[in-house]
Every structure is written in structure tokens, then in C-alpha cells.
Amino acid sequence: MSKYSNEFKLMVVKEWLSGGTMGTPALAKKYTISSPALLAQWRDEYLITGSIGSKNNKFYSPDFKITVLNYLKTHSLSEAACHFAIFPSTTIANWLRAYRIFGYTGLKPKPKGRPPTMGRKRIHPLTPAQQELADLKQENYQLKMKVAILEKLKALVDQRTEKNKRQ
Image (cartoon, rainbow, N blue to C red; front, side):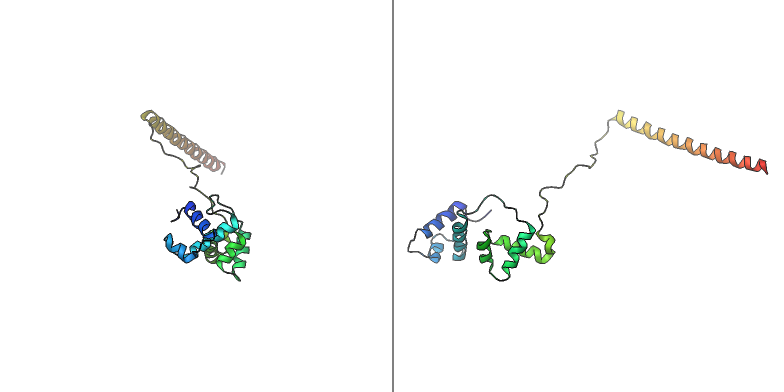
């Protein structure tokens, strides 16, 4: 959340544009704005886009971000923001920081929201009847395995005894 509302920013910019005798330092002092440069940023945004503080989040491709960062090599941050109509200019500074740390992959969009929970097994407590059924199924499985092992063992023993009889 910003310190100043969009309505307040628009009111101050319109007062400055109305051609009053006050300059940006005087207006900043009158409305207790932290710096005149901030007022100049609001003015530039209003003059270029026609509004202040657009509520829709725009999507910028990584290639476009690279273009803006290349432009930034020969121009200032505020000039790049005005040239490409990207406000606030801190957006470009964030891209630059991400590019310096992560390279091109830092400019790719990140997935939004929480990770999906599909595929996770949720453990629900079993009722006594369900627990008894599960125990019986487990015991049945173990007994089937024992029978299979004993059958294989019997087949091996029979095979050896038959081999010994032939000799």
C-alpha cells in the first residue's frame, strides 16, 4: 500500500498543472510530500498515461524487460520509465536487481499463489470397523505370501530329490 492515495496524487498534480505560481518544491512543502522528485514522478506518469496509479497489473515478457534494461544502459531510470511508460520506476529497478542476481531466468514470471495440494494423500482416522478390516486384509496378504514361499520351497525340494534319484 502506498503512502499517498491515487486521488491525493491526482489532486496535487492537477494543482501543479493548473499553472499556479507554486513550483514543485513549494507544492511538496504545502502537502508535506517527502520530496519534490516524487511529485515530478507523479506528474510524468499523469502526462504520459493520463492517470495515476493504474490498478491493473500489466504482464511484461522477459524479452521486453531485456529491451528496457538495455535502454537503461544509456539513460536514467526515470527516462526509461517515461520512454516505456512503466510506472512506478521502481518496477524497472526490481527487474535490474533480478537480472543481476539470476540472469535471464530472473525476468521470467513466477507462478502465483500457493502450490497445489492435489496428489497429496490426506490421512483420515479410521473407524474401528475400518481398522479391523484393514488388519484382516494385511493378515490375509501376509498369509498368501507365506503360502507362496512354502510352495516355491516345496517345488525346489521336489526338484532336488528328483535330481538325486536320477543319479
